[in-house]
Amino acid sequence: MSGWKIELLRIVLLVGVTAGRIQSLASPFLKESFQLSSSDVLLEELITGPLRGRDIFLFVDEYTRFSMPTLPSDANTILMATHKGFNVGHYPNYCLRGSSYIAILLFSRTPSELFHHLSLSAAWNPTFLLLINMNATQSSMTILDHEVVQRSKHLVLLQPFNKGTINTFLVLTSFPFRARPHAAMSLWHKTYFRSDADLFLDRHPNMEGATLRLGSWCDDYPFIYLRHPSDDQCVGANLDTLTLIAAKLNFSYEVQKETQDQNWGALENGRWTGMLGDLVYNNKHLVINLFLVNYERWRDFDTTYPYHAEGFGFLAPLPPPVPQWKSITYPFTGIMWLAVIACTLIVSLLSALLPAVMEKDSVDYVRHILMVYGGILRQAVQLRGVEWLAAWWLSCIIITTAYTTNLVAFLTVPVYPTRMETVAELAQSHLRLTMQDYGNFVPAALKESSDQSLAALGNKLDLFTYELEYDPGFRGIRNREQVLIETYSYLSNLQMQYNATRYSYLMKEQIYSGHSAWFLPKNTPYTTKFSHLLTRLRETGILYKFFIYHFPPSDGQNQPLQTHLWHTASVQSTAPGWSR
Image 1 (cartoon, rainbow, N blue to C red):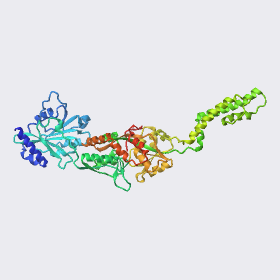
Image 2: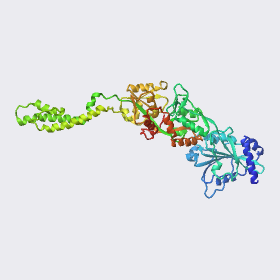
Image 3: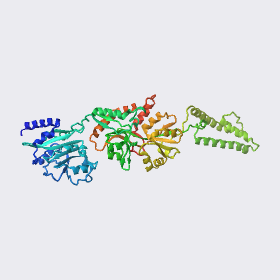
Image 4: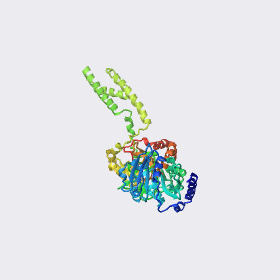
């Protein structure tokens, strides 16, 4: 058939698909006894055309009959496997997921057994998936809706099409967020698809007004929280960020105020709880609360690129003030005080013994000792007969002048007691640790830690219920009995909310620090869309502006604290890689 007739039929097909009538358009021209004869040609055109230079993972079933096409001189690497008995454990991950290999599934019957096996493994997720139906008597449109197929970011189905002398394939793809997701691209012709970009379209250019359900908990300041305790409106830096992304990708979202099980999100006995459990069991699409990436979460969920770094901090009670009378001892160090006392005793002894040895008459020992102490008190005395004490007096003038000068400084500037700043110091102190019980991993992680200091903290950790808010924690701080542990930025906000800056401080060392990300169900095909936009907003500084905006206004002294909280990627961490 001439080229203009093929082009005309292609246009007619596209119009028909747009109207949602693919089946009614194509089925009158399909013959039940028709056996496609151009499968070998099709494979060769694919491998030498749009897939040229790409590695191929080719799957065939026992009903498919074809001969291996002639490969070009710069032949691709082609792995072959059969549907029956396929085991994902026999292949490395880079063959099963990602863009290293283009997966091609040849089938003449619906590969139900293969799909069932692949659905049991999260390892299967090729970026490029090409389905080729070799049976002209069977429509395979419904295969595009299968969960295993929808994992792939780029998806194409080649469906046999026969009309008169036309013996070719209909090229289809799936746009999952559209009302009618199946879309025909054109009839197959090697001149239409010269590169993989021509064949594999972006299936998620936008989300077509879809509504995403958040697995969220509005108690994660400043990322997502309730504007007022009596208000149901959730706000926060991450919600502001999501609003920008939603405008870009054309979707809306529903916020969940709190989780059903009142847990934050941890792996307990092989089952996820809290917000992460919502992704697995409750059909939620996205978690934007503060979760850091660790191995278990990376294994079981999709994550965006990191956008923030933070750990768990400690809010400790300020040590009791130093008694005022101790100020008289501060001008000299302990060693200096010992040296002054020792020298005074030695000089007093010499001033009493030397006259007794030299004069051999009755000696007024009290007078000689008082002359020594008179030098310390800078009292005027006559040194007749004891001129050698002039050196002592000169030394006393120097020492007492230094003492008086330092004393003025210490009386003018208050002296603060030494604070705990490290986990080791906290573990050795009499203070106990306290934390709100909302299903966090920290209590178990502390008790099971191989680090002696962390294990000691785990053994003296007290939990209080979520319903009590943080009142028990701050009561323990005021009584100088406990130290409150929580994520660092959340803890700084609690300190301001409870007006606790007068009697508490944030320790410098953090634990379980790492990089935070947003989480989606495993093998979500549009994860990279969120990652790209979130990274752009991070690089342009917009996320930082949102973060600063949600801290309460202050007299300007909070700006260094806000900046420090945002740039906590450089904090010292005892055990990195965890989160709330």
